[in-house]
Image (cartoon, rainbow, N blue to C red; front, top):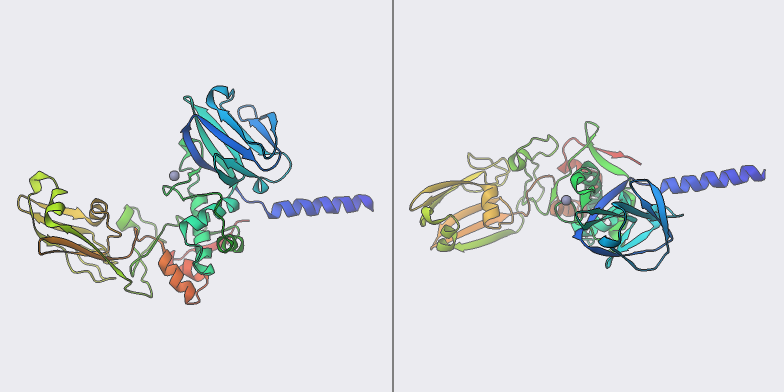
Length: 367
Ligand SMILES: [Zn+2]
């Protein structure tokens, strides 16, 4: 009887641990540094990755510095001795992260990688990617998008020795700014990802569509059927205006352009295509007539050159000024965060929000 009881307790413990499990990912925190200060919240072991052997034990709550000249191994890992990885916290310089750490040494420099279960990683991502004050269903949609993105892009930094970086290049990740609202959105959608024909999708998102999202092919050239342009309930948000003097504007095109004489671009009507506009109305190309030559520029090029919030704009030459008037913020592909917020306030569930922005996709629970 006693044996059966012990067995049952062990089984229950195993199940409890499995219930908290999620795939481990590796996030690049620092690279090209000569030393790093570390501290772990619970007793750990240090492992030589080449031999997969334990080198030494690491005591809890004691700061220590790893310097390149004192490091005898090319790659070491610090992992908890007894508790699950998700329950460990590691302080890397001044920031605290969930999980452990790997240090890779190459060319006399260190790469510092946070080893973290994806659900704990998301707790450090979500507040950076969407305001924690947004309604819960919008935050849940963002949680699914961020989780899918992380799993889909795991080989993005393979050459650097980790999966994803912690900047806008991948997803902004700060380990130690946690919020109840974003944590709840992650727990409520635990393990859920978005799929198209049973395959994990590319969940691009942006701040504000301005009235209609964009076909991915018109922004990045490749066609993904689930990243298609969709209309928003709110057709016109607040517009933005960016102005340049004709002189400043012309100077950006070099000396052989001369002075700007005219702009040739059809009038913006959101959700209406034209020969020079995409299906959402974003600028495909615009002609800029100069005193010495005429240029045909792509909308994305203009956006970059003049730091415009989006490519959904009108452009005119008036009183020796170039005036851009537009809508939306960001590239326009996939989920619009401002739209997700208004739908959530309107009573939409996160599933409905995701279905709206990622066409014909299905939500799937991985674990
Ligand atoms: Zn990156």
